[in-house]
Length: 518
Image 1: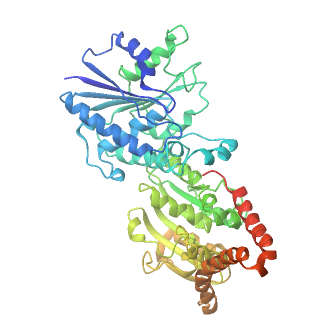
Image 2: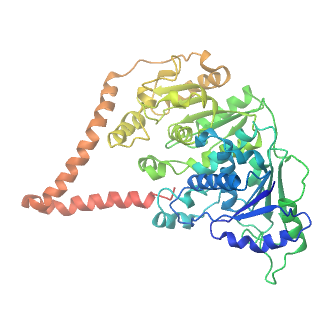
C-alpha cells in the first residue's frame, strides 16, 4: 500500500512553489518512503472565467483516477494554499457525494486522513472600495475572483455543506489550518467551520505572511518554528481538540431581522427585536449591517444583489458557531429578496420559520423546490403597497425575473393553506407596522397555528392598477425609443432630439454612477 500526498497552489502561484517544502519533508524521519507526491496545477488565474466548483470537480476526478492507477493507496493527504485550500475542501466534499454537487461518492474519499490548509481563505477575501470600482471592468459576471469573495455562493455553499456533511461521518479526517501571524488576508476567526469538529485545528506561525507561509527564507532554509509547525500539520499525529468558539446548543434560536427599501434599523427592526427578547430570552438576534437601501438602488439588478454576500456570510458564520441552532427569518421588502436569493443558490441554507412582509419575490415562486429548506412560511401583504404592487409589477413587466409582486398578490402556489395573509391596512410598511408586530411574534413562537386579525379586504381598483402597470411599462419604454429613432428621420422632431437624448443620457449616467461591484 502507499500514501498519496497532493499539493494544490493558490491563485497566483504554481504547484512547483511547493518543491522547497517537499524536499524538506522528504528528509524528515516522519516521511513515509511509500509516499507518492502529486503537484496539481488548477490552471486558473485571478481573472479566470472558470468557476471554483468546476475546478474542484476536475480535481476530484483527477484524484479518483490517480488513486485507482496507484492500486488504491491506503492513505490520502490533501494540502492546499490560499485558494487551493478551498479546492481541496470542495473536492473532498464532492468525493463524499454531497447532494449539492449531484455526484455519487468516489472511493478515495474514505481514505483521506488529513487536509492541510495553508493560509486557507476559508471565509473568502474582503475587497476594498477602490477594488469594487475597478473589478467590473476587468472580470465577467462569473469566474474565479467572484467565487473567492466573502459571502459568495461558492464560499457559503462550501461552508454550509462542510458542516452538514462532515457531521454525518463517523470517522473524519484531521483538518489543519496553518496561518501566518502577519497574514493580511485571513483572520483567525475565519475558520470556525473547520474548527467545529474535534479533528479541526488551527496553528499560527510567527513572522510569516499569507504568501510565504510555506516558503523558505531567502537563504533557502526554513525557520525552526515555521518548519516544526508545517511538518506537524502535514506528517505527524495531532491530538483532537475543539475550538472554544464553537458551541452545541440545540435550544439556541437565531433570528434574522432584515429591513427593506427606505427602512432604517431604528424602526420596526428595533421594536420587533425588543418583543422577541422579552418573549424568547435566549434568542440571538441578527440585525442588518446594510444601512438605508433606496428605491433607486433596488431598481438596478447589480445593486439588488449588493448585500447578498453579507447575508450569506453571516448565516454561514453563525452556523459554524453553533451547528445545532435553529434559524428563523423576519424580512421586509428588500430583506425578502436576500432570503429568496439565498434559498435559490444555497441548498444547505435552512430556516424553521420565515415571515415575509411586503415581499418582492415573484408571485410565481415555487415553494415545492424549497420544502427541505423551510418549515413554515407566513407571507403578509399591505392593501395599498405601492412599491410592490406598482414598482415591482413594472419591473416584472421589463423582464426582471428575480423580483415580483408576491407581497401584494400573494404567491400563486402558496406554501400551504394558512401561509398567506391578505391584507393589513396601509401601504408598504403595513405588514411590519405596530398592528402587525404582535402577529409576527406569535408566528415566531407558535407558527401557523396563530391566526392574524384586523385584516381588510382587497382594493380591486389598486389590483387593476398593479396588473396594468406590468403591461404598460414595456410599452412606454418601446414608445420612448421609437420616438428617439423617429427624431432622426422626421424633420418636425429634429428640435426635440437633443432633449430626448439628453434625458436618456442623464438616466443612464445616474444608473451607472450608483452601480457598485457585486
